[in-house]
Length: 147
Ligand SMILES: CC(C)(COP(=O)(O)OP(=O)(O)OC[C@H]1O[C@@H](n2cnc3c(N)ncnc32)[C@H](O)[C@@H]1OP(=O)(O)O)[C@@H](O)C(=O)NCCC(=O)NCCS
Image (tube, rainbow, N blue to C red; front, top):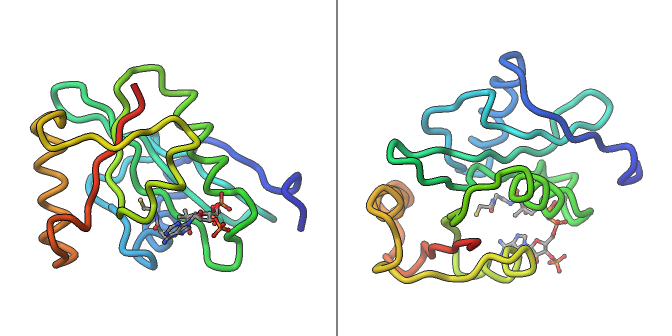
C-alpha cells in the first residue's frame, strides 16, 4: 500500500477503542482519552496510527500519544502525524515528552530540547509521572518545545 492510500482524519468516539489498543501496545499515554484531541491515520478503514494535542488546565499544550502500528512504521506516517498536529495547533510553545533517542525524530519538525527550568509545572509533573510509570531513570524522559 502506498503513502497516498493512507488517510488522515480527526478521530470519532467510535475510534477510541482502537486508539486505546494501539497506545497500550506501545505503552503510550492513555490518560484522559478524548476523541476530539486525536488525529488518526487510516488504511483500508483501519486505524494504523494516532497522535493528539493535550491541553493542560492552565492552557499549556502537549503533543502526545504518538503511535504507529508495527507493520506500518518507517513510511512517514509518524512524521506526517507530527507535522499535521503541530501545524493545526497554533498555540506556542507546544511541548512534548520523549526518550533522548527520539529527539532526532522531532527536531526536523522544529522541536528543541528544553531544560527542567523552562518547563511549566504540569509538564514537569507529567514528566515525573511517566518516569514513575515506566520505572526509568530521570534522564530517560526529555522535554522538547516548539516555540
Ligand atoms: C515513533 C513512531 C511513532 C514513528 O512512526 P513511523 O511512522 O515509523 O515514523 P516515520 O516513518 O515518520 O519515521 C521513522 C523514523 O522514526 C524514528 N524513530 C522511530 N522509533 C525510534 C526510536 N525508538 N528511537 C529513535 N528514533 C526512532 C527514526 O528516526 C526513524 O527513522 P529511520 O528509518 O531512519 O530509523 C513509531 O516508531 C512508534 O509508534 N513507536 C512506538 C511508540 C513511540 O515511541 N511513540 C513516540 C513517543 S515520544
